[in-house]
Length: 173
Image (cartoon, rainbow, N blue to C red; front, top):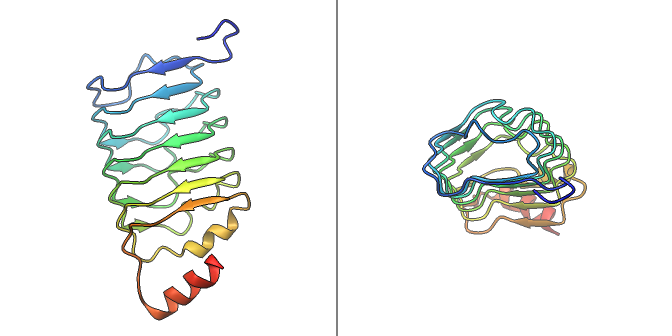
């Protein structure tokens, strides 16, 4: 932490954790859990960390995120979950992250994203879903995210169906 306690950074990367560590301070402002073996993030598992602004969960073998996993993280601005093994986003994993500005999900195995997954992220500015296996997520629904200025969605398996391609192209223009 710094002298004023405005920053309290927790570094638990590459520590062979198979679940979220129990001793993380509630007043943490940044938590790094990169390079662990977390497999699954359970509902409400980070609740109470009202000061958390940045969370790093990269390369931690995460396969599944339960609904409302990040519930209660009102101050979270940046969520890094790149290079995991996430296959599906069912729609309510990111509920309650009203102040989230940056979401990094590149390099996973995501093939399915529910239409409601990003709808509640009203402050989202940066979204990276590149390098997954997404085929037909209606990306034009991201128009519901009024502050989105950066989207990376390349290196996916996007559908070449005419109706999908027309809507995708129209949204991009």
